[in-house]
Image (cartoon, rainbow, N blue to C red):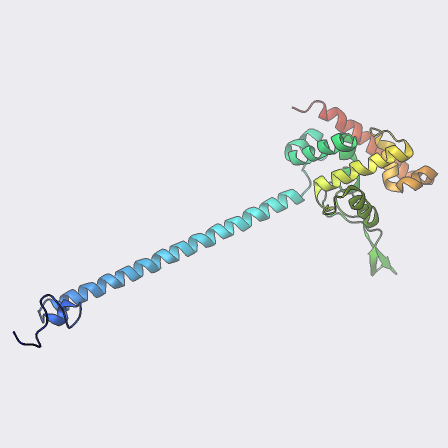
Length: 244
């Protein structure tokens, strides 16, 4: 054996048998292998494209679902004159108001009637704008905002005294809790029964000091509004007593 001969079983040229054995089939085998690799690459590309399209579809559906939920939660219920219909449409609202009643003592029907009057259940309700000379914007009539139309200062006081510092005026449970808290203040400071929607509304509108001074007596329109709130509260009370 020559000293330069390779050891038995060792391919000194490489692992490609075509380079070691110059056979007629090597070109065919190479072509088949190249076709197979191209097919694999195309298949992987197709799979990646399908996966990407699937992810896009899922993302679009997710965004649409969030948008639908946001729209539905922001819109007032369709039938505001039927407490049972509101309860069917917004069961989470009633769970929140029931918690408020248990915590502060404000009946659900009084809360509901007052919220209707203040914002007609619009979470981002604001007071009208003021204008100089009839056309130059000059802020708003007041800082009242949200479901309960709470003023900035009163809302800050509520958050400070209750410890609910993350409360938001456009969040229904927070608005309900605020209303219960305020009505409990009216009960404590001005001895207004929690079920007295008429006087509770007057105190809610005029403030505790204004109510104590009887400032509402000079405002016929406010007395009429309070009467409407009371009528609605009693209607809601009767309706809720018959809800399934």
